[in-house]
Image 1 (cartoon, rainbow, N blue to C red):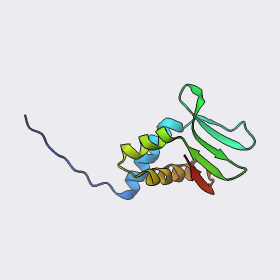
Image 2 (cartoon, rainbow, N blue to C red):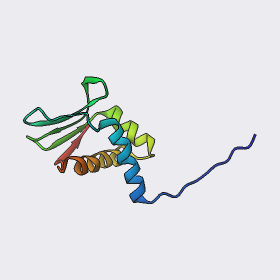
Image 3 (cartoon, rainbow, N blue to C red):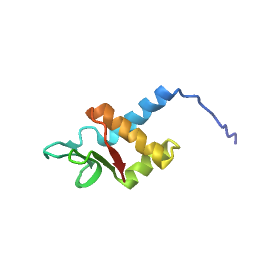
Length: 103
């Protein structure tokens, strides 16, 4: 049996695109904007489990802990780096910069 340890060099831009694509696969088309003061992204098939929520009133972007850890662990990011990547995705998707991040 032969095991090969392959290493790839991925540019920051391509890594960010890959991270955004993965976040899209979990959140795209799952936003509920029917609320006047919130944008809510639900888990697939579950309108009770909130993965990401933005509050217009206080500018808070809430990221559910398990979703944050999923993205962070998938890409070898720290928890803080994962928050920043999800926030970057939110800025790109919604055009809104949160005042602060919460998990």
